[in-house]
Length: 418
Image (cartoon, rainbow, N blue to C red; front, side, top):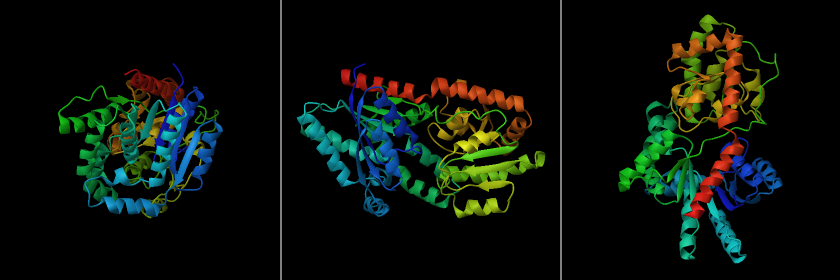
């Protein structure tokens, strides 16, 4: 395939935590394409990741955005029909820089072949690009990477979240987010999602608005995992009876899962394995979670911000993903599998995996069955090794970022041919 000139817009800085845009951009650039990244920076530490992308040849355009500006955006949107997510990351300076880059490329005779915009928070930038293209008489393919269906996530959170803020916000936002996501599907040449469940949810929303079948427009592009970064532990490094749960703990779905794990699952594990230790590794744990862990000091550790999750994953005997609701492909599951750490998960946490991947996970949806699966792995070192090795083989085959970036390039080329 011919190399492409790609404008890639992300409404938050791609980093090792925001793995999807970070790795897609890296591997597209490594495959010989020219990538221009337009993004926002909120924290100074994010500039290190942008510098790493620039070091690989990516042209980076970054504009600052403050939390105050995000809050102002949200307040302005509150009385309108637009969901907060759609305006939360709007920065006029970035929009201006994007338009300037489009004009500059066109004048140089090397216009962009395709524009890729990520997330509902970035959709307004995508719409702005489409307006510019129409005003200038240009046929410029635009790909909107929805990642997940946010309405589908909100529906679950409104029912099941243990976070009061999460329940209230998702209930307030659900109606207008449904309408907006359904409308957006018909606005772009291609829409990407990470799982078949999210694809169907988006198509249902769009069909409810216009009655059309958008099956050819909505494409599944799964998440990957950095197989050179997340690697198995050397023999003998794992700590016996250690269980790990990873993720940003201020996120309502992760907080709900952590509370479920500590309050309902682990007491059943401790009945059979009093020596079992749970490590919750991830940034921004709320005080509520820290207090609960403190009551079980010696049995539960909450790490707080963990710049590198690999030591926790490679030392653990078992990784768990007890999500009661969620969307898309869970990076925490892929990262554990890449480290050859056996996984116990709820059905919701692994819905984005292929059937081959499900065979290498222990799946349980009640506290007792979840605890039983954890204990069964803790007492059987051979089963641990088999499950871990199978998980590693699965992600090597199906969640390699290089292959996923190649699939994305095929989507781009298909649009250009059309």
